[in-house]
Length: 239
Ligand SMILES: Nc1nc2c(ncn2[C@@H]2O[C@H](COP(=O)(O)OP(=O)(O)OP(=O)(O)O)[C@@H](O)[C@H]2O)c(=O)[nH]1
Ligand SMILES: [Mg+2]
Image 1: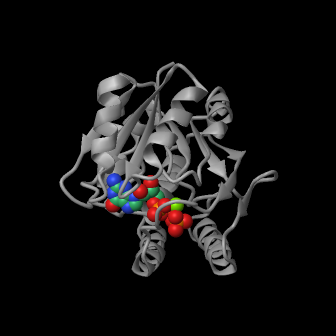
Image 2: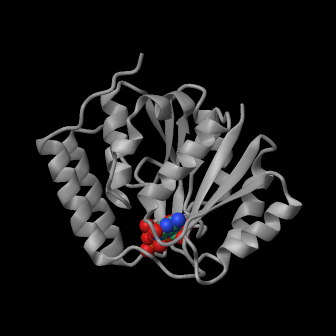
C-alpha cells in the first residue's frame, strides 16, 4: 500500500523539515507532499532543498495564500494522479504527532477513512487555553447535531482517506476552506455510506510558529454547516 501524507504549509519554516523527517521515519511506504502557498518565510525553499536529497518528498508551490481547503484538494488530486492507495492530511505544526501514523494506517484495514480524534476515549488536548477548548467542543457538538453525524471529532485535520473515498466524493464541489471543509468532507463521506473510524490522539498546541486561523473563519464555518444542514449537497453513494 502506497501512502501519501499531505502537509499544507503557510509560514512553517521552523517546523517543516522536522515534521517531514518524523513522518518519513514512521513507515517506508509513506511519501510526503508539501503544499506551500508561497510562504514569505522560505518554507518552500527548505522543502525544495529537501526534495533534492530525498525522493520521498515532493513540493507543490502555489502562488499565494489560497486557503487550507484548496490545499487539501490539490493534495488529493496529486495523490490520485500518482497512484497512491491512501492519502493522509496533517497540520505541519506538530499538533498532529507523526507517531500516531501507524495507528491511523492500521485502522484503514477495516475503515474507509480514519480520523485522529481528540474526543474518543484515550484522546485529548494539551496546552490549549480554555476558550479554544470550549470553541472546539462547541463546534463539534453543533456540527454533530445539525448534520446528524456519529463522528466525535468532525473538525480534526488529521485524517486518512482511501483512494475509493476520494474518487467517490465530489471534492471539487467543496468550496469552503478551513474547518468547514473538514466538516463537509465528513458529512459527504458519511452520507455516501463509507465507514469512518476514529483513533485517539493527544492534540498539543504548536510550540513554534503562529496560528493562521482567524476569527472570521469560525463564523464562516458555522454558517457553512448550517447551510449544509438546510440544503444538503447531492449524495454520491459508494458503488
Ligand atoms: N497551503 C496552505 N496551508 C495553510 C493555509 N492556512 C493554514 N495552513 C497550514 O495548515 C495547517 C493548520 O494551520 P494552523 O494555523 O496550525 O491552524 P489550526 O491548527 O487549525 O489552528 P491553531 O490551533 O491555532 O494552530 C498548518 O500546517 C498551516 O501552515 C493556507 O492558506 N494554505
Ligand atoms: Mg495548528
